[in-house]
Image 1 (cartoon, rainbow, N blue to C red):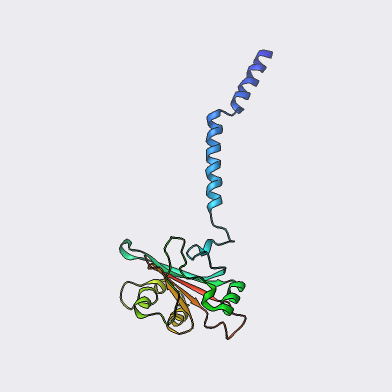
Image 2 (cartoon, rainbow, N blue to C red):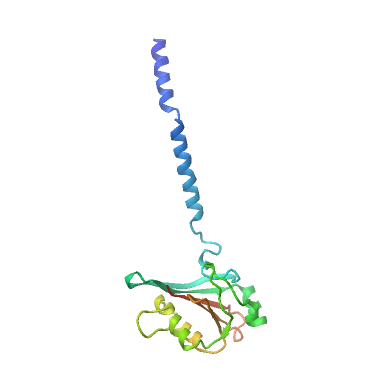
Length: 191
């Protein structure tokens, strides 16, 4: 009888024991799960600002939209960000000098010097408003805010810069009218 109980106990112990390959497999799966979960975006931080150079202090993303172009040509669209209060104050006091020239985007492309709006026709048609096909930048966003940002590109008092793939439009013309307004940045991109 003791041998039968001992045999039953041994069988149960072997069944519950962790084999080395099982332990290794679970360790690998757990490691990859942790890495994947850690890389997912959160509701905090600069995950929405990855398209802008790091010199921008973003308060929030206000709007975004994009369109997949036909025949696998890529994606075009626009993202609108609101700058932080401190950076807005810096721009309010120092103008465009608050943001250095030659900014580099996360993709490594260098933006040109800042220029005053209105945006020249060739750049406007490349990033903001193209009446021909295919749509570009802002046209691809499908947002209700397109009209306002077209106007920002076409009136004096704002600034823009491009890196050849995207246009950054800094909306500051309204800052002197209302001291509570925050500066905004439009990022319009093409494939």
